[in-house]
Amino acid sequence: MFVKLLCFEDSGIARLYYECMDAELSEDLQARVIKVIAKTQRIPPETVTIDSTFEELKIDSLDGINLIFALESEFNVDIDDEEARTIKSVRQMAQGIAQLLAQKPSSQGAA
Amino acid sequence: MRRVAVTGIGVISAVGANRESFWRALAAGESGIRPMEIVAPGTVRFPNAAEARDYRTADHFDEKELALLDRFAQFAAVAAREAVTDAGIEWTQELRGRSSVVTGSSTGGQTSEDESFRDYYERKQTRFSPFAIPKAMSNAGASRISFEQGVTGPVYTVSTACSSANHAIGQAFWMIRNGAVELAIAGGSEAPFSPGMLKAWEGMRVVSPDTCRPFSRDRKGLILGEGAGMLVMEPLESAKARGAHIYGEIAGFGMSSDAHHLTQPLADGAAQAIRAALFDASAVPEAIGYINAHGTGTMANDPTETEAIRTVFGAHTATLLVSSTKSMHGHALGAAGAIEAAATLLALSRGVIPPTANFLGADPACDLDVVPNVARDVQVEWALSNSFAFGGLNAVLAMRR
Image 1 (cartoon, helix red, strand yellow):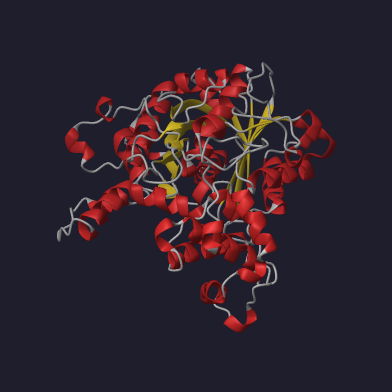
Image 2: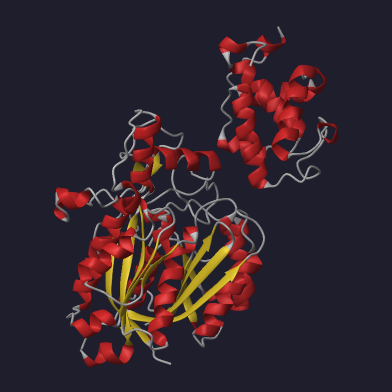
């Protein structure tokens, strides 16, 4: 039900909705995003939280696009170049992934 | 120290496969950026590129030769032929031994390499052609030029990503200036349009989904280009003595390294290279009238380059004309500096400053006179051409009329 609500063409509406619904990011998704970040950055997973910023994790611009590459592979989604540029925190990243998964008709709930 | 004149120019680019058509397009502000044709549509997310469409392989090589010649080496040889003919060089055995070829290339014969690797991995062919190695090596262009022209002096290739050609021209310039050689053919060539290479660029997320708009608001990245630029250089005195046409002089060369990051540029590093070029040319900043910018159109380069220019030129920045011709011929990587040196020398010699095309409006972080969209009839005496590479390697050429 939650996923269906997000199937708007206008991603701005979806994003607004998500900003109100941060708590609703599934724990499974959060855990997977954090695991990929820890693995890609070669840092202990316990140092990464949903509230970490890229700056705190010492993720620079090249690391950032490398991370996006790893997450695209993990979740089998394509992240737009412009969107990619605006992502500066773990939460934004997880929200973006959730949004893309929601837009994928064949993959509700699964990667 | 000897002064160094440029007496021959050869160009292959998206805006023309020879010097004069290249210059006509630049002076008219015409961009060569179009939908990609070399690889199948949909291979990568970005649809446009600056391909050398007017270049016809069959006009220059027979089929037997092509088995050993990657597109990047063809570009090098053909641009060198044009430059040597333009300069009116009459070869003697002595001159051949006192001449040099220095080329720049970032990726060398990777189109051929990509193809041979596909034969192995995808088509499961178990045998490789014996040509695969010599066709793909980065010095294949320099070597081909040396065979064709009979040059037996120092011949080598410099590979410093997007600064390759400026490093190559700078090295050749210094060899002539200090008397190590009497003539040099120097420049760069690149042919980066293989499916594998394009996918790699897609992964970097720096290629624009539409066009290249350097220093402009709403710029979205660079546009990949291909081609070559080659210069014939010789001591000014010899050029005058034989009555050669002189486009201008290479007057200084400056290099620096950011010592900072593989992809993030640093204004201090760029400024250091600009200062080094001015120092090498014994020129004061106020002498410079035009800068052919590195100006890739990426979010990172353009404000950093602006900051570097402002740092070096201070109040004089207000009177500087700065344009990025990459808006027309794309970013030809290891050939970029050579194509842009050709543009800069033609601007000095013909009194026209080529514009920054595709410009939509000012970005406050890039507050320079970027000669938006329309060329300007201005005769400047001195110019710079900037190249700043991934890996933080900067190379700047100073030129004078």
